[in-house]
Length: 404
Image (cartoon, rainbow, N blue to C red; front, side):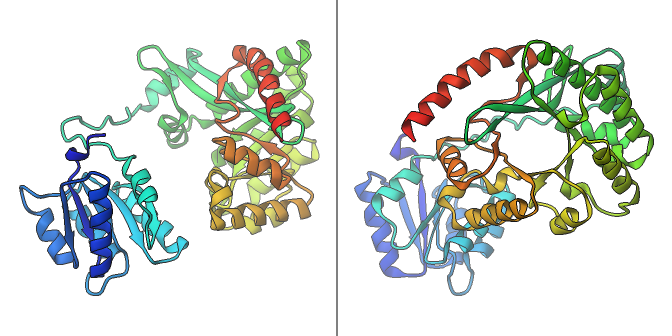
């Protein structure tokens, strides 16, 4: 990183803090540093054609214009630089401020508590990258219903599978089925670009039928190869609008010879709103027929406890936003632990989603959670890649056990 490329603005109402941060930055080799003790002066500097900063060290609690109001002015000015929050506010306030700035598409390198250390400051500034004003932001292609309908009819939808492992033993206990569109021109298209199209144009039933059929066929192939893996399949709330869907799931599983107890049907809790009568009947009857039910993304919906009360779920998946980084974040750790404890008291199996790194794995392992899933373990993969990955995973988990 070229220190001379960074034009830094320090905004803080405390004169001592301004001098301290300016001295730290000078010692770190940064020569283009301006300081302001109020928001208006900082905005005037931003509007300057010559001294406009591309990195701002921002205090939150200031008289007059506070840090969050200043962020709003950055948004109005289409600020493309980066922020580092340096404040005496508590961790939750700093996290909320970070989330707000990122929601406004402003790059936040992180936050530090006063008094900041030179090492902490250097680490965050090390994340800085020069903003690009010339490269256009690539927009996701929007597909129309006729294209998706043709893709379904032409067999272009394929299933990828993300492994789920028993945290205590490392054993691969199942996979989550994640549909992809193998587009003849655009390559692999992720579901975020076509599921809403299917839901809006009455294609979700056809799409679900393809996913279920292929997943059940794949289960049989794995079973014949000696692999007994539970297969999880995501359902749209639109799938649960018709009682015909119940019969279709039962018939497809029976035709493929898949035991219902090896099928997990995942429902995102944030979508379970409104009139629950038909979804409640479908899910309860599926449970009676011994299909397993999983409540997905737990914690991000509006009525989590009501869903646990009213619907017969076997499994609870703690949303990745409460898993990744929980080992070093008191708020996330409290939410993860409370969700885990609640599910355990209800006799449910618990899956931690979003295990992204070694720290996440260690945290989940120590927590007593049942199952883990995430990029640290494996990314979604074609079915053909699973056997080789499982061999590699056994070696990897062996190293974990020796380290523990």
